Image 1 (cartoon, rainbow, N blue to C red):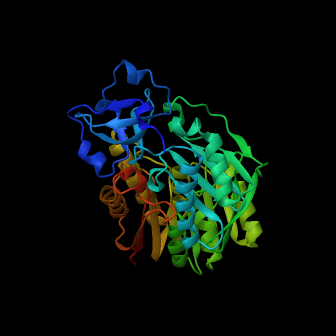
Image 2 (image 1 turned 90 degrees about the vertical axis):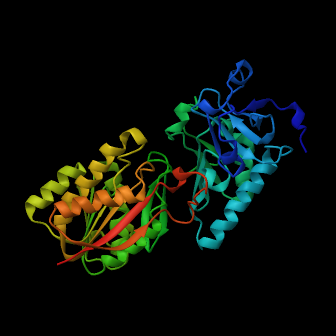
Image 3 (image 1 turned 90 degrees about the horizontal axis):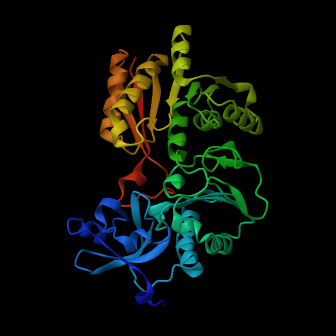
Length: 400
């Protein structure tokens, strides 16, 4: 047990919503905290006792005085020790869930606040884990975190990825490095019958996006025996899943030559290279060119980056989603399917869906909504944090 009396204390302002924190909200914004000289002097990543305005303790929080999210709730138990054993318990709970969900060790092991580890992302690739410590409290405890992760999972390699956008806001560096073993540069990842090549050393984020797994699977059903177009394809997520499910052909479009090379390697590893093509292009330019060519596909998927990463960008982002739908709809053969995705947490599902349907209507097409999806269950949602439910996918059948 720890002596909580030795910990610094931070306090909410009188108008701050302490009730939300009592009900499980994990973040405290700088505007809601008394930022006196003592609080400002705390080292980034310090653990403190968070109190409400009446000085009633709410729990232990990690403090980042220079960040907009100035405090992140860690534990309601004031006597908890944020040490190796604490990490072991949290990581063990996360692993038990994934082992219930998946039969092979390829998944998101830790989804930050959704798994009670604020700011921490860990993706597992067999005997390698890639972790993103996106908050100062994690960076200062990497030794305990790494040791606990190895003990819980038994992995041989752990790579720290410093590519997270929030690290800069926390005053952290952008240097990625191995923390255990010699992590491979690339690994083959089996998922939905397909094989993906994850570039752990130089790829986006941790090297692969596990969140689309259930949406890959549903879309693939609609591409069986048909022609598939995968726009914003990255390493071939939807196209390779469709080929694994029996699609006749797949065309992957992306602006990154490196990502398309990985997609082609995945197709070769699956033995479907003869049915897989790539096109390096700006996605909007590619959609316009394919329309000019009179191309038609039985399944079209558009999975763009976040067009609305924040509330100020929402309206512009919604217009971009509408444009994607308007350009993609004419490429769908009568009776074919169109899947549209958004990873913008600011674009909530009703607004995103309305933008997509508006774009489809402007293209002169009528649609049936067959499917609405989100991230897989290895990306659990925090009940009090909408940002953990960022991913949306809708699949529509375009009527003849």
